[in-house]
Length: 365
Image (cartoon, rainbow, N blue to C red):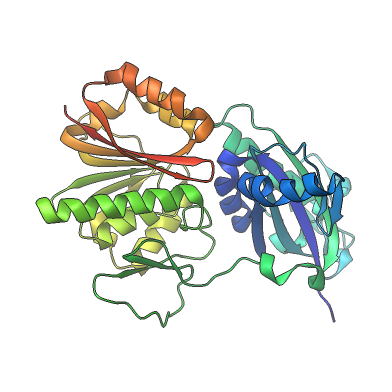
């Protein structure tokens, strides 16, 4: 018998796409994929401009007016097997919800596999509202439809396959055993399932990881890396902190405001046997905390807001990796750091992928 799924389509500002992916997996999404602005710009829009028509496909309407700063996210949840068990938004009073069997639930204790699509929309909206506390003026749209499993194209399913992140780093997006054959100098990072943002597949984490790998390789040749003090700000799944630890750094602090992310990152570090090298926390830095390297894979807005604070936590002759910068915001980011101190901060390297930019800066305090 074919299984039915509810397909939820979410259009949201691209800078928070990775964060929402993680939240959707926490809600129990079985498969998630995105159509990002680069794909729309390089593949879909040229096709539309050639045909001079609007084109419909299985996933709706794409038009040449589509906002290139949007991420289009599709996620899939199994239909509740027995409609009598489904908890419906219309069958509730306040925070009390019922199903056809007159079972009573509160908003906090409804099992994920009992949620009606209307209630799932409310859950998704709640997650977006939480994200909105840190990203101003988020614009989004949510729709859903019931489909059969055959309507989910195999190529769009989340691929939990081993992939190469940098020349030295392979990523296994799962904790199952991998048959990867590592050559001399290569390391394997295992990612705990449901840690979608920061797995390395997204542009911002990929750029940050490559910049980090190159920098640590150069520092290893010059002075070694064991004694470096490293801060991973906005650690997410913990992948950047774990990469640093696997490449020899022994003193790492990793911070995220999301306690769920912190717990996942701790699990991921344990799987990779580097827990003793990393302190994971959701607490703020102490004023006296100083680091030789700060990793900040955030958003353009957060980086601009934090620019004045970075010097307080950087040692003399230190480094700063800034990732998650949208190309449209690059000049604003550079202007802010110039305003903070254009003598002590120097740009050593700029890396770009699609619409994203990562900066490597040195700091002479």
